[in-house]
Length: 115
Image (cartoon, rainbow, N blue to C red; front, side):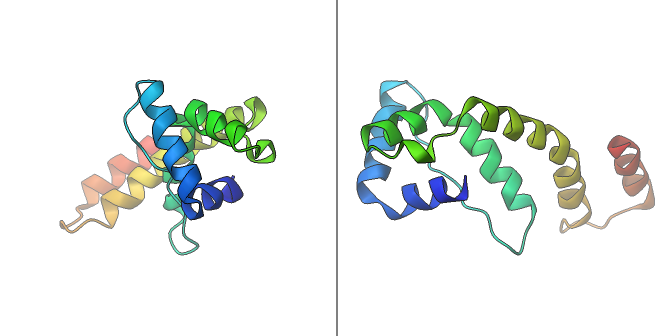
C-alpha cells in the first residue's frame, strides 16, 4: 500500500489522473496521504484515505497499467478492520497529547472507551 501511495505522490500523471477519476465519480478531490515512521497514527490516516478513494485510485492504476499496485478486496477488508481497531487508539492519543490540560477524568473515560 505504501508503494501505491508513493507512486501517486511522485507521478504528476498519476496525480492528475486520480483527480480526473475522482471528478468523474463525483467524489471530492482527495489525494493519498503518506505515513511517517515517527507518528504511528499517520498510518491510520493513510488507511482511511485509501479506503475513501479506492475506486478512483484503482481506475487510475488500471489506466496507467500499474495493476500490481491495486487495492484489492482482501486488502480493503484488512484496511477497514485495521482502521476500526486503531481509531480508538488514535483518538486517545490525540486527546491526551492535545494542547489543553488533561484531567484524570478525561484519561479514565478514554481508557474505558478503549476497553
